[in-house]
Image (cartoon, rainbow, N blue to C red; front, side):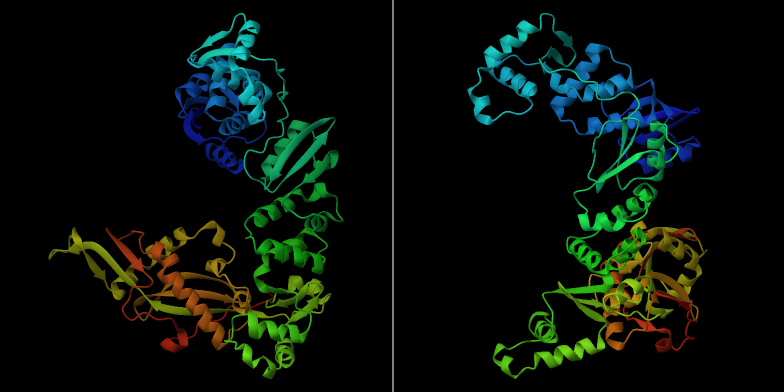
Length: 550
């Protein structure tokens, strides 16, 4: 429902329904207060003529208007027709009544085609009953049922959408005008029920802080400490919920829980069971502890069913895929010796479910890990830069007088000229970054739980002037130095992002530079390669050192 809204002598659009973050942004852009009493005037509804006729020109509470849009968003064509017919019949103008209509469409039937009365009657019966078996509906005499409805509707209402008939269902006032009924508009991670004096408000994880503030306003409360708070989630295991709700009263940690649920929703199907296992054995005591574990999942490997050095050696040689295994050699292989060798140099521990291997350096996990025998040593973070040549092109050329004109063929922009556009290219790179890349940069897309994932805290692409030529650079922030094998693995990852991932999208972005548009590729140079500053013979960038891990 795209609505054009008129408020404070301004005209602007808002796509409803939407999450609270959009409403907060909308109010902030207009300089109006975003609370539970905020009202707006609907100028035009782009959804359809029916919605426009019903809502335009009227002033509504913004949250009520959004709630109504959420309800209508779930309706099928038949339910929408019934809703509009009810509103027309009742001459409804109050948004409170409109919201209540959305909960009572099962009390009415709208008929616009009487050519098959048996089908009409069966559809009316299904609406009234809301759910019946296919056999019962098949055996029903639809014409007879339709006639019974006609007899009970002496004066049915004629509407632009058809004739409106009332059935035997009781119309219920679900919305009291103050407290929104429980309604899960989109998928969420759980529900928070906040109650006071017999009234209830519902929040759905993850939620914004303004949603919590509005819920308290509607309840007449100044803080959650005045309310009863309950949490229900079918996505979070009892074990995880217990870990994050233990200790401090739950009402004091709602926003931390909301942050947790937002991050939890981003986890993959493999990561969620891994989090459950780590929570069980690391026994976090606070919400912060659980969040630290969740944000560090990439630093762990869990080998289920591995309880001895021999088990581990057998798994690594036969099942891990790291080696070519010939079963005819099994009796000659000392699995226990190989497993013991790996365990000696790894930072891991055996638990009831198997073997936990920790690759990371996060000191926030140190106390929890020490409880199961894994020690974390403090490290110094450092910066590593890997340089690569750029290739830039444009569809502009320059005549003898220095004037630019557009051409229909690709023209090279040479590195020495490209250096003049460093600021414009850096700005384009910044604009190309996604919100989900804020914490780890492009390491977010590194798929292996291994030492590289743990050692490389984050990396991003940039550009740098090297001896007058502009070069691409991948800047890595490291929790610990990489060995030769790890450097090769991260180079392979960076090469993939430069060619097929981040770089493929970036090279299609036009960048306005000195009157022309250029396209910059981090991959297509003929002599492409990744090199350290030392390999290029330039001064090694000063390392940025800081104690601690991620």
